Amino acid sequence: MTTATSVLPGYQFASDNTSGICPEAMQAIAEANAGYAAPYGDDHFTQQVCDLLRDLFEINCDVFFTFNGTAANSLALSSLCRSYHSVICSQLAHVETDECGGPEFFSNGLKLLATPAPNGKVTPYEVNEFVTRRSDVHYPKPKALSITQATELGTVYTPNELDALNEATRRHNLYTHLDGARFFNALAALNLQPKEITWKVGVDVLCLGGTKNGLPVGEAVIFFDRNLSNEFEYRCKQAGQLASKMRYLSAPWLGMLTDGVALKHASHANQYAANLSQQLTQIPGVSLDSPTEANAVFVRMTPEIINHLNARGWKYYSFIGQYAARFMCSWATTQADIDALVADIRHAAPSE
Image (cartoon, rainbow, N blue to C red; front, top):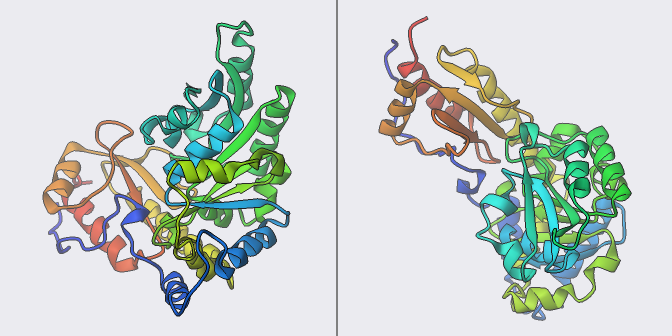
């Protein structure tokens, strides 16, 4: 066993939410704060961001802003479904495990049909299985598919996989909702244009995450099928998501959507995750639990390593099972952060 050289951690790997506001977003907030602006989204900052998002996705889409991802996902799904409908999703999907029944609540009762998705990805087979299982009135009628990009296990759907899902959803007349809390990380990993993994492969509505990529707060709900956004503004208002000073939700996006900043930050996070993954797999007693494709590293470690990290004050999630850990990298991760974590893991690792 080697001698521990790390200090008590400053950066924490529990989530990319632990990072602060990126400087570009902070500058945009400061600019929005200089003077007066119309309320409730009628300000020029909000309109400019909507136009930038239309340019980014190369389509005339409808854009709305919410305070967080739970509201974005829940309201988006409620706009696609009635109370007697169901939504197919991964059993690890945030809409299933982390949103306190939000989709069910805001839709007045839709049912989530959760499936064991390999590596976090729902497959066309699973879609077909749920849709064709029953067609009688006693079964909640499948109406939508909800997928996450990048997934809750840090993997990324390829265009071919999305094409296959699109074929399945269109065959069964399902809508497709995309939880894009880490969409920019997936985009950076694939090195594609945003349209190639959204509306061109059948995504009807995208909940685009900014918080995990450097924004202080706020998500964008983007309807590529504008027929589905009818009266969505009323849903936002009723759910307490219509900010009076909307510019403070929207303006930070200006800093992210100008000069490729969002993609730059996502690429940074992905690169550090790849670095961490490569180093950890060389340590005895550590093994990857799923492929490192975006900014998440999922590993299994010995009890001794787990106990040592806990004693040292490291924070991380272990929702995938015993002796498992998820380490998230962000726009703010540094090499020193990686080195400190790796050093503590090496300290408790079994001798080779």
